Length: 459
Image (tube, rainbow, N blue to C red; front, top):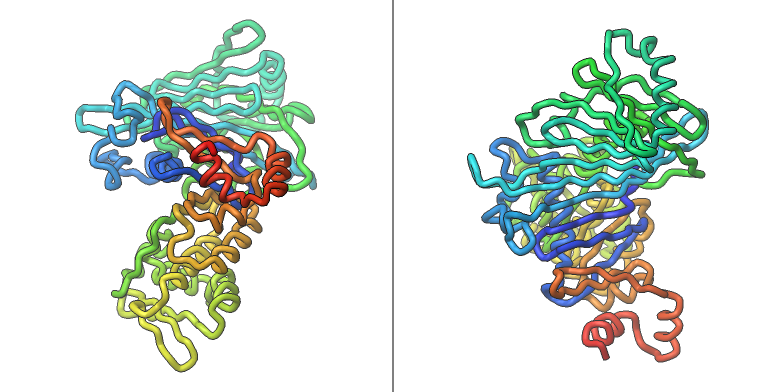
């Protein structure tokens, strides 16, 4: 299966009241004044990863970045629900053709003061076409068009017992207008993290009810719940490959979200490390690049070479410079060599180090790459190279910037202007890029001048 993150949904997170971003493959740029909330967009995605796939017991997904769970809630109002979600394009191959579906996954978080102060997920909502599943600690409720539900139920009754020989009972459906509602109730004690749902929702019989409908089902304590999914077709997939079944059932969507979040890479303000770093933990790139030596060591251990993107970038921008990773007992040290001269970590240029970290992130195969203030420590030539590499990726890259150089390197269609008003942070895309491009060209005004002066100050 391939998964592409098409949309990001954020509500009531830090300065953001309500915001949705439609993403393209390659660079998607966040531009705006200080305090507009650009970094908060990136932090919301990082928080979703931590809350849904990383956080352990005690469940404190806001730590260590925030002192209190109220710090991540809009207005620090404990009555508000934080909502974080993603729109995912799903692609699966069957019989030589690519099937597709679009799923929206949203998690709602609430502040909890007792027995210890935290913020936790209280429900997940998954929408695939006209079928919706709502999961909370009390169970799962599925709503689908009656006609889709009936076709899926017919297939399950005909084929289900052959596929699932264990005795099971069908959940009782209820009719609500032209829709069918079916639910199963349970009592879940632990936080609604994605890994935990694997233990209560099991994949049931599934197959093609027709060319355009997938008959999925879920099993919870031997109760079988239908989940019909309308199918589309695609010429080719985009996004990242994930090791999942090509079926777009509810459990598959949850696993796809889990896989996407694990592969999010977030980078900000790369820091130089003079001393060796522990080799352990070299599979995940630190957001400040502090463990770049360990990640390179791990990569070279798996593939026997440096990442191709790193070597190509050095050859193009720092010809004659070679990178080496040295093992010192259970630690790794990054050094560079320029001709016969060895450059210890303290002597490696900041721009070179930042370039290595960004290119290493590319070779790690992220589902979504987030970079805050990409321009820091980088000359215009390096930025041009980096933006060109990012635009060649088949996944979204979300950049926050104050740099006119970066803005002028990106198409108008890829730019969001962020501002902050009474309703919090809002994001505005260019409504008519072609018309604005024509006007700016006739006036001899750069795109960056428009966003940093005309757009910012209304001149």
